Length: 163
Image (cartoon, rainbow, N blue to C red; front, side, top):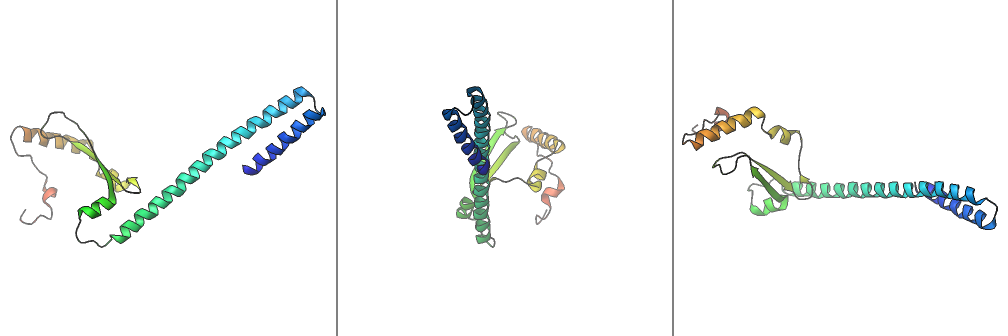
């Protein structure tokens, strides 16, 4: 793109000289000047967009490297301390409840990590509850609101001693 921009700049300068010296008719000069100017500004815009994309890509790569270094540094931690959490997490967003003024309600939480933002992959997408699971949660919430204990599925207690 930069080579073509330089070529167009040279052509426009030559075209201007030819017009100034009277070797090209005025209407032909205006037509060619407009054509080359349009191409020049279109290429300038495209170059600007590509440079922004490249900068964003390089910036994202740098942030990813910083996050990987952070994970390597804490790969073998034994205790999850507030300091470690603060190094990894930039913010936690707690979204509105699905039912207002209810004691129990379903609520989505988004966790944003330092350097990489909100992390999404197949595993986190699988963690999103299905419609059937949401209906079951709502039923359990309604039971809890009536003063009954909610029925918890057996898999909740998997691995819990004494359960």
